[in-house]
Length: 148
Image (tube, rainbow, N blue to C red):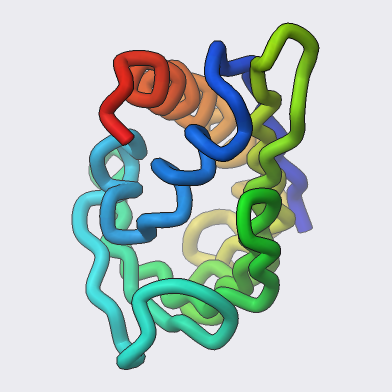
């Protein structure tokens, strides 16, 4: 199982960062690899929310099926991946110096055999880390622009 972890400092207080991140349907606005999110549960936020995320990385498209398994308002969103890619992930928002926030994205993913299994996970993890670093730059810009 490959681990991918990226983090950034955002020049906004944690509640402002959370206001952007808590809207799962808006993740496509800052995640280059997330094409579309379709909720599969009546809930749109909080524990128990389920959704399918159409994901595209280069020529590879797949539907990432997820369930929110942990939700601490203003602080943490945890998910379980239950589709072709399996594993767990979490977003955390913590206070940083100077009324800023640290946003961390941490995933432990297992890739299917046809994406190279464990070897694909290593290579894919490097690719995903670069994409997610870019995603965090976009998230930072969105929050700092005052969109929330």
